[in-house]
Structure formats: structure tokens, C-alpha cells
Length: 84
Length: 209
Image (cartoon, rainbow over all chains, first blue to last red; front, side, top):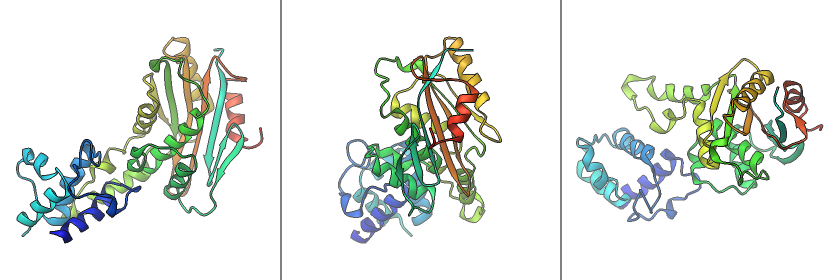
């Protein structure tokens, strides 16, 4: 699980152009949206693409997105449970 | 004819940035627009986290607007009294190509939303407008070469029709090989007449005024 989180940090910085951030700056429990990392709606779409492209996971119910993308830890948990 | 005057102008090209004819920044090490824009962003101590999410040409337009408006006092101007009229020859072709690369292979078809949203030059005007809270008219013209007359006429018409009182005009272009931004600020304050002759002079003599 820790490996997934560390990999996700690098992928997030790369995919979401968080060029002023380093992996160690991201707290895996911190909310990705709102007060935390401050991601926006385009970032949310980018995260959906990232899950599908890098992990082969398609989110079936868009309503689950809020829970899955709450933090890096919740994303990693979801990947661990759904990766084939 | 209008009585508009040009009060500020800036030019970014070939790893150099000029404001009102004075060189304010150069970076001979950067080998492309992405590197140069980051270098200039840090040099002018701009603080706007969304900058890093922009595509290269929006970064270029954003930085030119930062330089242009740094010493301009728009505090007394109503936000919908500021309009932006820009132009270029390449539209967003570099970003369009990046988007194309993400969809070219149907077996690896993952269009990136954050690239796709920048595949229109008007988005650059949007980024500048959000940053500086500008809510006036906006237009982006695609023309073969910088056309001062086109920009001046459009701005003068907007002014004469009472659409706005302050205008940002210019050219922000990026091709695979080079980049250039030339912006000017025009209103009823300034020393330089707002006409094609003067605009062309400023555009062609960026560091000799």
C-alpha cells in the first residue's frame, strides 16, 4: 500500500502539473480537493484517466468518485482492491 | 479615430523580456518556452498556483500580462470596462498537437482533459481575465502576421461604441520553433497615440525606445 501511495505522489505531480511540489510535500491523508491540495474539476477528470491508463481501473459509478478521490490513501486503497 | 493613448507595453521573445522598452529579464540557459516561462515566473516573484497548470502559450500570455499590469493602476476602473484583444498566427497549434498525440493510437486512447481544455487561444484570454478580474469584451484573431491596424481598429471601435475604457491589445504566438508576446495597455491616459503606426513602431523596436 505504501508503494502505491509513493507511486501515486509522483504520478500526481507529473499528470496534474504540480511543478512547484515535491512528493514529500504531499500528505497522503490530506484532502485532494478543497482545502487540501486544492485540485479542481479538470484535475478530477485527469485522475479518472490516470486510474484507467496506469492501473486499468474504470470507475463504474461516478458517485463513488468523491470517496475514492478523497485523499491519496483512499485512492491507493481503491487501487489495491480493484487492480487485477 | 479615438483619443486612446498607450501607457505601457511589453515584449517577450528569444529568452528576453522587455517592459516599456527596457530589458528587465533574460535567461540564456533556457532552451524552450516551458523552461523560460518558469524562469521568468520565478524571477518576477509571481504567485499564482494555477500558472503551472497552464499550457505554454497561456503561460506566455499570462506572464506578458503580469509584466504589463505590474505598475498599471486599474483599481479605479470597473472590471467590465477592461477588454482584451489579442492575435496570433498559430492559434494553439503546439497544444493541439499534444492533444492529437494522446488520441492518435486507438489502442492507447487516453485524451488528457488538462491538455484538451487549452486547445483554443481564447482560453489564454480567460486565464489573463481571471487573474486580473477583467470582465470586458474579448476577441482573439488568427492572422498570418502581426497586424497592428486590425488590433487598433477593433479596440478603437469598442471604445467608440462605449464597450470599454481600458484595453489590452497585442500578439501572443507560439510555434514549434519560437515564441513571442507583445502586449500594450491603452486608455485615455498615456503619451503614445493609439494607432497602427505607433503600435508597429513599438512592436518592431522593442528595446530601442
